[in-house]
Image 1 (cartoon, rainbow, N blue to C red):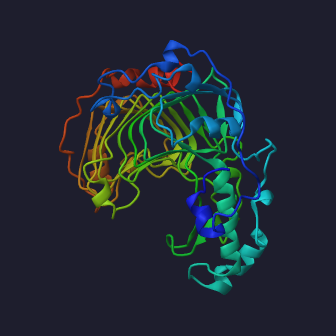
Image 2: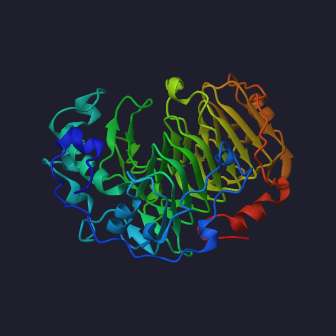
Length: 435
């Protein structure tokens, strides 16, 4: 039987999940390649500090797997066992499948009389007002959401490498959870469309309320020494632009593409593509989490492509975050900001390149979120040097930021001149790609 998910325990009392157990025969053994087994090179970002990150490099044959479906992946991950593991993903693995591998739709998860039409009728602000939803339909939504979470959230344990084979390895609808683990590598995977069937309406979120969803494609939660390399993150088949609006707000079925939260530390994200998404990358999830996050959340982002990203690339709280040699390609419409300077954040952003349409105000590249300062030097905008902090301070009254983040990054094995960053990053970032 699968381990009981926390939300299932709260809503369903940890009763046997109706869609069945995912116990299977072991995934097939695979003779690993040397590059896939390689750990993070010395000096490559925060994940190389304090002992470095090797993932499952020491896995023996008994703990080396090639997986082709959700059941095999869930069994191979076995987050309770810290024995080094090498897990190779072959082809597409759809997380929204039952124990027999059959596809599951949102209707399959719905329970206790939940329906979207009934939910919309029950909590219409015109009749319900601006208070938080409660009652039978909200309870049914939460119970339905717990059933989906049991399938799509897959937990990665310590001393694990999970890597795609070739360029076609894809996790569809999955939320990979690196929780309370140490020494994890995630490489060469396409993360597509981790969608929430049951978004929750929050009438107090913003001036007009908002729909909020679960499931980051990849979340690093209370974990240390994590290397995220050469992956592609995308909404894929379910872009926000194709979704309906209810109560005058987008029916948002996506959360983040990558979040680093709850005391996570020593993370390097390199050579990834983050594409076609709204709230993309959050480092630190709450202004009130200082007791957990202060002195942690040390993250390096280098040689990543952020393409058509609306906001949070990244948004930072508390952490010492090094952002260098990334290419940011802003969308033609809907852009909000890239670098969010949150409470007690120490963000250093150097030698990056921005490609923006004329509709994007350069002053909006930086956004102040209760932070006080950042270091932003040697960045390019449209191929020309640009003092992005000065543009922000001059163009956004009342959001002035200081120019010193208070520390100097040293864990940088290679720093490219910002003028070559678009070509280098666009040609080398993403799942299964190398230059």
